[in-house]
Length: 173
View 1 (spheres, rainbow, N blue to C red):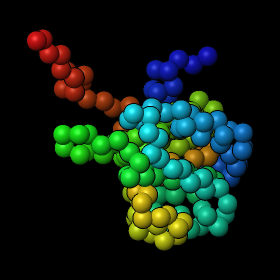
View 2: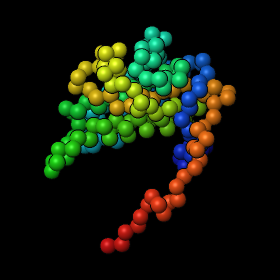
View 3: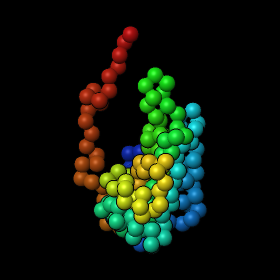
View 4: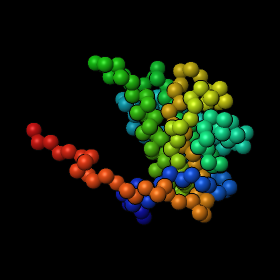
């Protein structure tokens, strides 16, 4: 069994997919991981649109150039009226909650051999128009998904990381 760290290290953003469709049972497992993701006060202010039909995938191409001809996509939205808000400044948790859900789905997909690419480069208004997303939902992320093509490879800089001491600080109080 792969450890979590091994899974996190080996997954990469797939930008080239095979034509093989993602099986419904695997989609359900990926969605389940999103449904059990933590959200602020467990309000669960997210909605997920599953796009697997050819017509929907064609619509997606009108919203982003980053569909990569994948056989599936999850559009993760935040319902900002339902999310928790910080009392002292009103900051809503919706976008963060939707991002946690997307991360859970992304890692669940990797554990099942399904490649994904988290896409934020999309036109929200086009998504609203093409998929009938109501105004109370904010499109946050597209998780493009499918089986990686045989020649799919990580971005060349995928394994380059800044030193921990640049990114992490231990504070003594």
